[in-house]
Length: 375
Image (cartoon, rainbow, N blue to C red):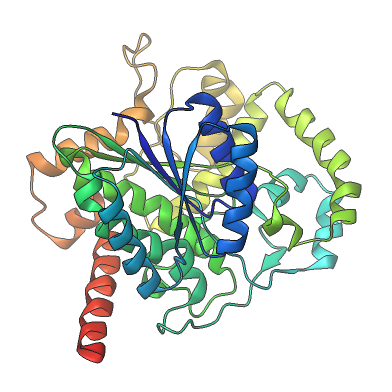
């Protein structure tokens, strides 16, 4: 049976490029463009059929920022298909982006240029607003609408005789510092896009924990620095033309630079230390690293001692070349093997579980009150 692939936000940018690539790789698949603007969706479909005349390309109207639109689209998809093999969650918004011009040009000629362009930290903010459903617009579009769509399409995604994949388009702008557990919709912040993307990363992990046993697997991708309508909404095209050469020169310098002990120590300072403080880890926490020379050098050892970072003892010949890649697998096994007996243990094992629970509660509440209102 031919594969069924659904892509949200497929009428332009990354979504349209993804559809083109999918048809190039497999012309036999059945592709569905789930878009808010049907006129643009028709244009995208025509463009795809021009280069892939034999392709089967369907359309469905979907505004992931509207609960009713998500429910209607889900019903239509369930009536149209018997299963879904791939669901690409690409649709997203960044409303009214505002750039701190002074900070931007200051960072443009500083050592922080790569981090600035990779995360937009310190230079980019947005003005969010409530949508007709009473939810923050960015939260509803980038996160909740997709969560609701997954839950509504579970009969097509979770089938015992085959596996399905959900793929989230994330961003390098997905920063933990922009996200707050107490403010999941980011009502009180100025970086709703960053917050929503970080939350979607966490939700993907929770989704795997809940649905892997039913054949549904979730993953997150970061497209990197891409020129799209969203990008041009941040800065005019002529400015991007001016600064891109500078950016690529700096990126090339970073890519071709040898990872030295000093660079490794800089990474620890700028990433590990803030994370330890933000997570409020106890003094007994240990840093896991292998025996690479830059990790065990004299200067790194002195830096770790000075900053009171204790490391996990590591065997000289480790059988596992990628222990970090097994982290979530081990966590899942631990969760099933030993049930948390108190809040501290629960937080230690399931830090991201609250995302799933919060979104589920919002979903159930929205649907409950919708039924009460319109029946």
